[in-house]
Image (cartoon, rainbow, N blue to C red):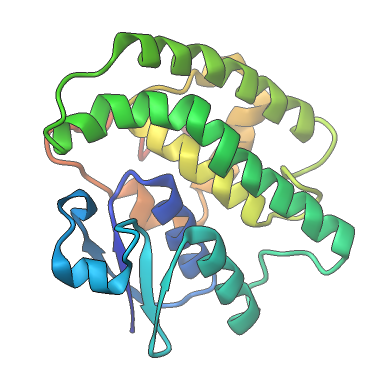
Length: 221
């Protein structure tokens, strides 16, 4: 069985968890307090970051590289299209969420509201929280624009792009920081993702001191 060292609300860990579950790869989840830089964990990943996946006798780090490995070694169920231009679009959107969305939204909301407390780093910076709350509106509008042209974010089939986006939005939804009323299009897309069996463990997450809102695990919102 594979082992994933993770933290529950990390969107990068959630993206890997969703990929593993969609491909029906059994995996043990171990919460890792990576910020404490335990010596055993540093041996697994000197960068002191999660996720770290132990699978096939290998220890893998960096979520993008992990997902590429899973796609190549475990091609069923595929989360990448076959055409080069379609694969490019998936990678582009994954990069959008893991870079731009992460820096403008996730880091300003989840990290400020949750991570600081868990890590004992003080109180949220209100300027960052306001910036994140403002930025997410732009990203939801961009998602709406994409989804009005295609069935899923990167095309007409569900791909890793959808899991990357859902990983970030689910982390934010855990702390009620997504205005689902802003876009029925995005809400319907998330409801489809949320209903997949791969999402079950995500919806079961619990972070001590931060209970999720009632709608978080409700498949009908």
